[in-house]
Length: 431
Image (cartoon, rainbow, N blue to C red; front, top):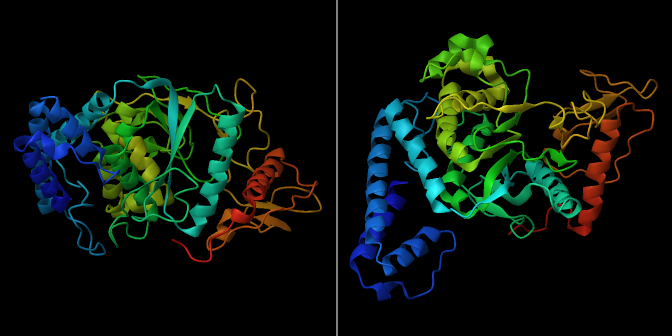
């Protein structure tokens, strides 16, 4: 970050004092729209705004230097670059100021929002396991756009936090962000998710037209487009009953800088969540910081385990500068998880759910057709069996298997694989 910030500062100084003709040439880096914007502003005589940006970058560098001096991680963590250093011990007033700065920047960057749409953002790590999942996920996103042209579903971004492009760049709209430095996640690779979203908010969110963001995951199958349940005042989220901040109040309060009543913290994770872009900008840094702090707290790490980043999001949502976010909470009408949820028609409206989440393994007795949780069944399918290879299509789901959702899960996966045809799988030589 320091090197890039110094380059930015140097460039901005040059912009402020050199001839306007300097900007007459074409831009060569499409991933740095800020330079083109600043050039236009100078041409229009708005040098004051350039100076403001320069001051912001200088202040940001001072903050990073301070943060790095104060950073204290466990022995397993590797030395970190300034690009990726978390603000683990950041003073509350500095965190509040940065959150407000992000929120303000996202408001001023674009004033012509599409007010009734959300942008789907799905984070992946570039490994085979999430690679095949996101291809199926994106296929059904496209089908939703075709089948429901008037829905609230807007654009799509695959948020690739591997630090490098891959062979799917032309197939799926993608933004590449950095991976955490080696050792920093302490073996919990999911920590790359909040880091990826923090980078996306800072680098790319200003370029999307939609007012809202749907935070999604690659193992989500869209059954129908989620309605825009969120408002400017209130985001919407799926309830995870096993996220219980109040049951872990002693731990949670160590990260509750604003002393919010723990009972008011929502039983949610970061996905699926529909949130307006300004609220996302105001809490994404806290999500990143708190998740890292939780991982570096032995008691929190042991208590929260594989849902640690979900607790991070719940706590971060309560730390919003304007007060805790109050969510419009949804259960099965937002998302179902087979085989536990057996039918698509769920929730008060009895309409089909919007998302099918195939996170659990499917094991069934072929004599009774019943689900056998905890025991590998005579019929078995689990996404984790395909951590290093693509699943084949035409997966048979015997009629005796009882849950409708399991049949539909396999049908949706089969349909996507068949539609991708010869493109399914990895190329012989990746780019």
